[in-house]
Length: 230
Length: 230
DNA sequence: TAGTGTGAAGCCATTCACAGCG
DNA sequence: CGCTGTGAATGGCTTCACACTA
Image (cartoon, rainbow over all chains, first blue to last red):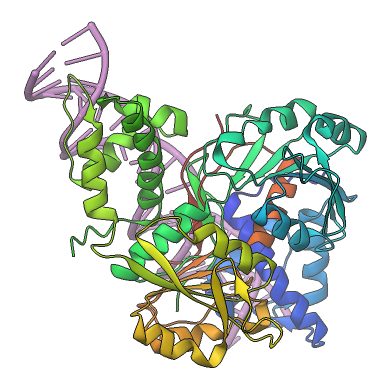
C-alpha cells in the first residue's frame, strides 16, 4: 500500500530503532534525539536522521522525535495492513526451533503450516503445529493466501522453493546453504549459518569491526547489517 | 598468519564459491571459468575475478581456474591453521538446534562447551555435549583457548558476552536481538532472525531483488550478502 | 576468439556540514 | 545554543572495458 521502497539496510535499521523506541515508550519517555536513538545501537546520529527522513517523519529541533508518533509512523510504513501468513518447510532441529521462535512472535505474521518429507514426522505436532506432507503445500498456500515461505531443509531439498513460488509465495527466508533460483519478483533473504560461523572464525583470527542484522546488499549480493562494534 | 584482511562480503562470497568448487572437485571437473563459478550463485563474472584476485590466485585465460588449486588457495587463506574452539551459551530451542547444526560441521571448528543458566538444563546432554553452568564459562574458554562464542539467549541475557570477551573470546556470533557492547578488537556477527523475517514480510509486499548470506556492512552497520535474485 | 587481470569509472550508502528553527 | 533536515562530499564495493595471453 504505502510503498516507500526502502532498501535492505535502512529497513533493518528501522526495525532495530523500533525495538529501542518500544522500550522508551514503556518507560514513558516522550522524546528522543537522534544520537540517543542511534548511540546504543551503534548507528551514527546522521544515519538515524537520514533513516527517519526516509520514513517521512519529521522531528522537532528542540525536542527531538516524539516516540509514540515515530512508532506510529513506523507501523504505518513497515507493517502489513493485515496479518500475513507464512509456511515453513523442514521440521528438523533448526526448522522446529524456528517454528517455536516465530510462533506468537508477532501478531502480524502467522505460521499457518509446517511441512516435511519425512513420513515419521508427518502427523506429529511441532510446537503447536501439525506437520504435514509436502503435497499439501500448494493447497495450504493458496487457501491461506500465504506470501512468506521459510525454508529450513538441507541444501539438496531446497528445490521446494519452486512449489512455494508457483503457489504464490512472494518472499522467502532461506536457511539452506544454496542459491535459490526464483523469478525476479520474488524476494529471497538468505541466512547462511555456515557462512556466518566461518566468517566469525576468520575474523576472530584477523580483525575487528562488527555488524548487525542479517541481510544482504545492493541488488543481490548478500545481506547487510545494522550496527557496529564499539 | 596469512592476513589478507578480506572484507565481509568478499569473505562471504569466497565461502560460497568454495561450496560449488567442492562439488566440482567431487565431479572431477578440473577447471572452471569465472562465469561458470558465479552464474549459479548469482554473482557476476567480473565479481568472481575480482574476488579471486583478492585471494592472490591466478587463473589461466585459456582454461579458467584450476579447481583443486583454487580450493587449496582458499584453504590457505580462509581456514585456521589449527582447529578453532567455540562455546555456545543458551541451550534453548534455538541454541540446541545450533549445537546439532555446528557439531561435526567442520573439523576446523569444534564446540567445546554448552552453557545455560537454567538449573533444569544443567547436567543434561545437548546433542552430545553436557550442558554446564555459566560459572564454568571463563575456565572452559581459557583452558581450551576458545576464540569463538555463540550467543543464543534471550535479549536480556546477552550481557554474557562480557564474560566471554574477558575470558579471551575474539569473535562472537550473536543471535540475541540486541546490540552487543564489546571492545573494538572483538568481532561481532549479528544474526537477527527478527529483522530477517520482518524484512521478508515487508519485501513480500513491496518489491523484489534478493540477497545472500547474512552479514553486515562496512565498518559496522549490519550484515551483507552474497548473491542476488535472478 | 574467449577469458583473465586490473586500472578506471560508476553507483550507492554513509558521513559531513551547514542553514534553519525553536 | 543544540538539534533537525538535507544538499554536497566521501568512500568503498561493483561493474566496465580493454590490454594481454593461450
